[in-house]
Image 1 (cartoon, one colour):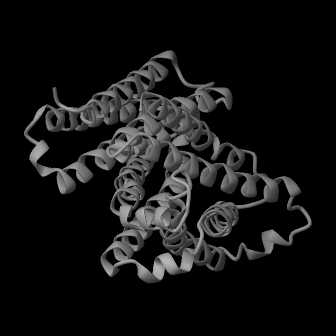
Image 2 (tube, rainbow, N blue to C red):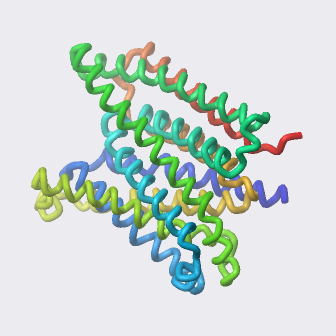
Length: 343
């Protein structure tokens, strides 16, 4: 059992590495607008790869969906659409706040809600136990971390762009609002995993391997997620008349490859998380989630430093950011304690 948990943890960490790196190619795009990049990423990561992997790894996939209860299917579809909306806001949020702060804020919120709410709905009797107190305490730490990150973002905005204090606050407020909404909605992807156990069980009974069983959930959930992402991208492409960027002679093959790579990295992270959480036992979706989020924050912030997001900011601003990120990581550690069985 311990060996399985160790393997599961290793897989979750691989997923974190991929997820923390997936947005880096977006910073290198030259000829495309945000909506051009995000649409290609969404098609690859939310439609093509999920269905290719599910069809290739799950025997009798359509029979599984046909035999599933409406309740299980609806939960996965609804939570998938909500998570897709969070993913769309995620792209907008990191475009405004950068990889470091954007990832920290969004995933700090996502980790707390992704663990707290499933426990509240599936194991309400544990809320007033040591486990419940750990979740509530972790959520309060998330709020504190957000305060530190907000201060860091406001200071960096003034120092690196030269905007007035009022304009900087306005830009920051929009970025923070987007990131907070993204964090809340992005947690719904874990809801789809937790509430989609019926589909996993059916996949196992049809001969799927335990590590692949979660692919029945991802194919449906991410298809609904694409509806939110793709729909908004198409709206922007029409509004901004940016369809032509795909055919513009100035469009570099690097834009295409970078956007496709984003989809590969992101969906790969979801697959590895699902494989790892399955191996971590019945509470894998609650225990694995905060660990997954914490390591994504670490990786994303390393990329933020490497790509120069803080190069022109003062040491004081960077110190606030490091403090906020440290508090968010502490919050996720506290939240992860809630998944340990009470003695």
